[in-house]
Image (cartoon, rainbow, N blue to C red; front, side):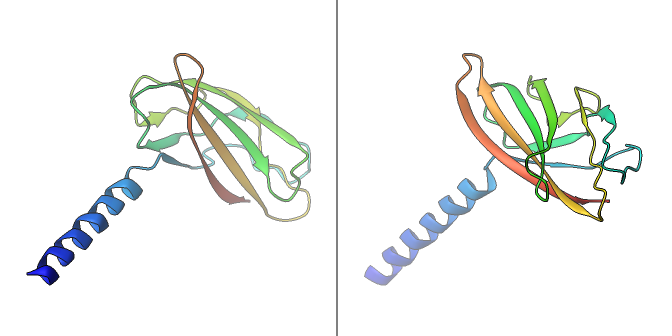
Length: 132
């Protein structure tokens, strides 16, 4: 009897942990149709499509920022997207400086910070890819 109760409790805890892990805010992106750039002089381009998951229900806006992991001091910029419950932030919501590594592929990371209507930070996540 005790073993059964312990197993049931462990199963319930495991299921709760899986639910929590599955509901963490996150996003993915694709570079989209940006012009190929390897000169070190980025183009100003439309933001990519961002596919969101588990956005907090209190979210009012999401602030995106791009960083080159190989050259972190270069500011690629980013922008803000109003959030109204959609799972997708469309391309062209804001402009930013495209990836443009002059010396081979670099890793670029978008960070997204979610805020409520009052400006309180709710959660943040990052997603990265190699370019080109």
